[in-house]
Length: 442
Ligand code: SAH
Image (tube, rainbow, N blue to C red; front, top):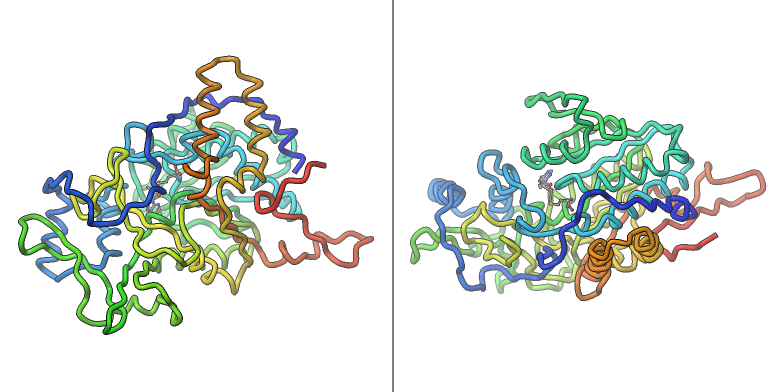
């Protein structure tokens, strides 16, 4: 991991980051028990009531999917919900150091696996493009290391509005974007550093090839099914119209077993579980791709290892929000179950983590990076912003312990492979994976 020293990247990112009174989404909020703050009849509420009246109560997964990504009215589709003026804030929006260290992680993995002549960086749910921008700046700074490598960027994004913001953040404005609404690649351009960049709605459409996959606060917005243990067995939670209060939704339990019950483990001991089949499908796709073509995936999110129960919650204007009130105006999210992701991946690839964000960033050298940036900056407001950002990312009471890092890697990366052998070694000795073990300074 000498790269970091060289990256010295004394550079301060031009974009001022928002700090700090904002709320991050990892905060726990139990659904449906908080006082009603807003009972507006939104277009989404009307749409859902119509749907429930015509075909009956819907699963929480269907509710989440409609509310967040319905192409006409979905929360994510037409707005910028991130940052101070939005509903919640994320790590890359807080500090440039976050994306820079992730950029170093990908380069470190690329070097450890034999420096392929080409790689794709595939980001799922890129938000405002801030994280990709910070990673690309590191790639440029380390141009001498990457000079013979053909890199391309592939963004998987369902939001029209956010894809426009990503393009503004990341692309060279002198090169016009190619748009093609009906095509799986709905937008194409060139980044400010001259790298080809493409947008997709679905991971399936991203070309298969040696790739690094990145998902930060993406898996937590995928729809979950919720189940309650009852004396009759598992019963799925549905969303229905509250017959006693006008224009209000409520949770009900299904009267009999439902198909998604198949996702619950036979030896499950909790009395309430959330399962996310969409996450399983995406993890299987990524794992198959990594096993076939090489690369790695880095997934960062708040979550648990198969231990938590009811984590479904909403955020609006940096406040916790009742998930059933004014749907379409607030973000909905549920903690990621990393034990499920591991199960979905394990036949095809190896996994590492989850480990706490604080530990991962420390192992990646955030303290050294902070010192470099502080030394370069004599503006008090900038120094304060760097220190506050560091505290927000690292403090165990803030994001340091709630957020986790989880990686998928080809089996041979952890257990040794032919490219890592040299003439004197009979046994392969793979280098440690950065971030998941302590950084060794050589
Ligand atoms: N990674 C960013 C943004 C997190 S918010 C950050 O950390 O700042 C979630 C992101 O996922 C948004 O960009 C949202 O539009 C996108 N998204 C939500 N559901 C999606 C889906 N089903 N497919 C692709 N992108 C999705």
